[in-house]
Image (cartoon, rainbow, N blue to C red; front, side):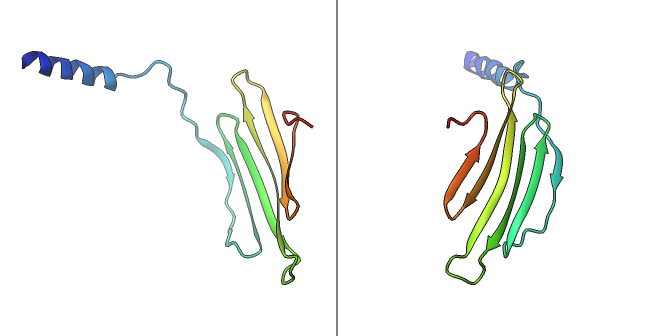
Length: 106
């Protein structure tokens, strides 16, 4: 019985010990706070301490017609393990999602 208690205590210490390969905590560096009530569109932006960014804005077009559509424009970026920045810009509308970026094959 004592061996089980000792083993459980050692296991608990091993699990609770700090891990050497932990990534630094990612925090919000900058953000746009906008009143997005969801009626005519929306807008937001954020940037994280690890290099990630996201920006997006939408507007409602052809309001009140049968061709009413939400048109979204935006971009997102990230930094890969080698430190290279990657960015994708996009539009999404009644004709689909249209990404543009150097990492996207043509």
